[in-house]
Image (cartoon, rainbow, N blue to C red; front, side, top):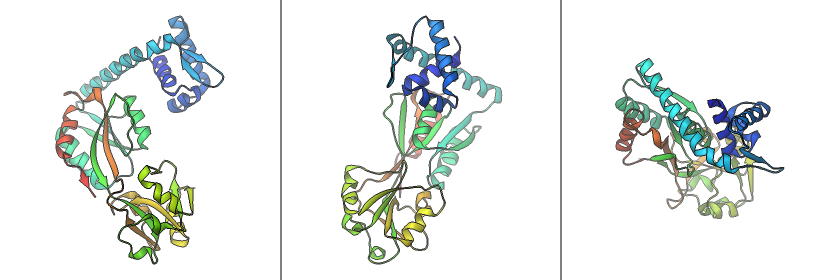
Length: 299
C-alpha cells in the first residue's frame, strides 16, 4: 500500500465518480482505476460498488475513509513541519477570489506578517469551492472565499461585507436611482455568469421582474459592460468601487446602483482546516485574524 493509493481512494470516495476524481487529481481515469484496484488487492476486498449509474462505497470502503483521512492528515502535518524546520520559515499559500486589494493588504501586512513575521506568502487565484477542496487536501493553508460548504473539518471567519448592486444602462430612469427596486428592471434582461448566480429567496422578485435571465460568458474583459451599455441588459454586482467585479462593469455607458439595505450583502470569509489551528502551525495567524476582524470590513 502506498500513500498515493490512499489519496486516490479518498478522491473517489469524496466524488463518488472516477471521472470527477481523476479531474480533481489532474490524472487520467485509467491509471486512477488501476491505483484503486491495487489498493483493493492489498487490502483483500472491494472498496467500491461500481454500478452502471453511480459509484458507491462498500462497507470496507466506508470503514477505510476516516482512517485514511486521519493518516494522510498526519502525513501532511509532518511534511509541513519538516519543511518549515528545513527552511527556517513558514510558507503560506493564500487562496483568493476577486476581492478588493485592501483586503489582501490587510491579510498579508496586518495579519500574517504580524503573527508570523518570517512567513513567505504566496497568493493563488481560485474559485471558492476549489479553494476549499485544496484546503481540505492540505495543499492550501488559507482561503479568501465568498461561499461556504458545510464540512466539519473547515472553519470560517467573516472578514468583509459589501453592499449588493446592479449594473444598469447609463440613461434615465436608471441614472436617477438611489436604490434599485424590482419594478425598475421591467423589460430588461438579467445577465448572470457561471458560478455567479445570487438566486436566493430575497432576489426572486428581481428575477420575476426582468424579461429574461441569460447566462453570459465573462471571460472576455469588458464584454458584459459593453452589452449593458448598448442594450436593455443589467447584471448583479457590488457597490464597493474597490471590488474587482465593480471595476469590471463600471465605465462609459454603465451606472452601478445599490440594492436596498434589506437585500443580502456580499460576504468574504477566511477559511482554514480546523486541525491546522495549532500553536505551531496556523494558530497564531488565525488568532490575529480574529482580533483584526472582530468587526468585519464594511463597504
